[in-house]
Image (cartoon, rainbow, N blue to C red):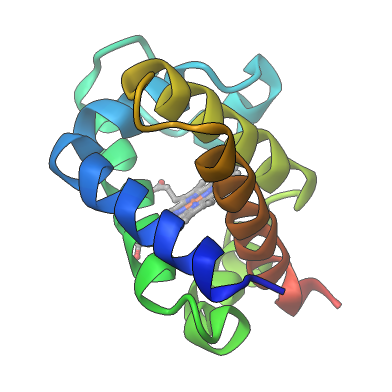
Length: 139
Ligand code: HEM
């Protein structure tokens, strides 16, 4: 599980990222693999910089911020979000891993100094556990 050092690094990284959350979320969503666009086919405009993509970037980053707050109990803390993605949205859980990877790439690109190897490992562990918590309701 996440060590207290991991948690400290995740919180510190997120404190840096939070003020830029909208921009980061937008970059994360527009770098997702094209097949994930099928989930958003009901949106009027899926292009780079469109209002729905910006809005959704903000929402997803809000979800990650919530996960940082619930870092000590991700499965319990993200229950509602897991139910939403599993039962209502029916998102294939494989996509959580893609999103986590994209977020790591965007964080590394946006914060080349703060995204140290230690922070990389801590964020990777954290996002893997977020993905697991979001997939919890699929079983
Ligand atoms: C909606 C979080 C991954 C598909 C949402 C919402 C949040 C959220 C907070 C808004 C819920 C609301 O409006 O009440 C997250 C987090 C993720 C994640 C934290 C991973 C770290 C994904 C992935 C997909 C996905 C990988 C699919 C490829 C959707 C869809 C919606 C949604 C389709 C509804 C969009 C709409 O308003 O039409 N997500 N999400 N999510 N999410 Fe996710």
